[in-house]
Length: 413
Ligand SMILES: Nc1nc2c(c(=O)[nH]1)N[C@H]1C(S)=C(S)[C@@H](COP(=O)(O)O)O[C@H]1N2
Ligand SMILES: [Mo]
Image (spheres, protein in one colour):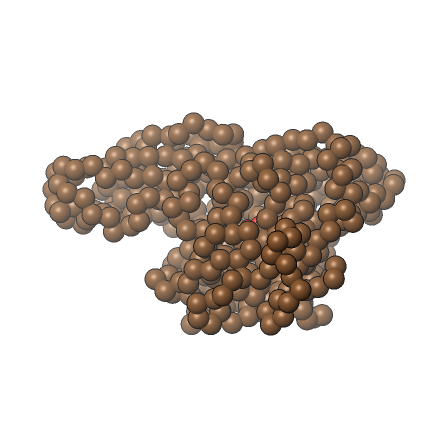
């Protein structure tokens, strides 16, 4: 059945031999998380405790951290970030609506372009591959709420650790070329995007996102049909997804099927109410003094993360502890990463690995040694080519765009 929806109790008729269908997870060890409400509003008490998070294996995926099972939200364990590209089967998964498509017929699939255009188009996957120039980019796909679970003070919402992100090589066609084929009329203001997933309750607004026309048409925004040289996994949006390099992945629409050119500003819950950040230079506010004005989240802020080993690492006096991490920003590229072991009084440069492009993350490494025993806290601070750097305080009510300087605990013994 083409329109069969995600159904926890009735996975019958779905064959795991056919890659176009989607099998729900293999046996869950214990009860899954309760169904998520709109916009992932888990209460603090429902939040998965970091230490007790279950692993789960869903179709086309390896064992990932189960954050919620309906809709599927899976987090990537940190050790997968020790390579430049995150493997498709380890890539994190996030959906808002429980009504996921479980069957896709690639021969019948169409991408529809309509609205303020001269000719509405219905493009097949074959046409996309054959009639447009293929392009590739290595880019970080990071959820706006990545690391929300470690915000201080705590904020409600999906309690992600640091693994709601990944870096992949995306291949597809330029959105600009597809828009040109449809012929955009004068006065286009925005472009909206919708996938095939639906809300189980009619009261839940459809997941539709919009970009300003100039961003949509900048030649960088891409309709991707491949991820790391293979078809997208079903859970990552097979057969097509939008790629908006440098921007948070809320815009990276999966199972992309509707592109609509608008001659007026888009109105809709997921732009007007959700995914908004304080309107100031660092998107910062305090719980005591919330920002009065908010705007849609967009470009990623600079950040640097410790990846390996895990925090609370032990090392002998005068022995080496080799630390690894990743750093990225919204597209200017990483200029340097510095490490401090004295609460930020002095900083030493980490070694940066070669760059795969400004939208990719850059891996870094740092050899830590100490001549004295005791607990040491290390800090990592990245600076982008555009001069943006990180601070000790960075907070907002929704737990979006974490960019605070991260800490790592070492025990010298
Ligand atoms: N169709 C559709 N696309 C979507 C979403 C969704 O709920 N439905 N969620 C967005 C959000 S918020 C994120 S973080 C990314 C997650 O991408 P991934 O699951 O491939 O890692 O998908 C984006 N695209
Ligand atoms: Mo997200």
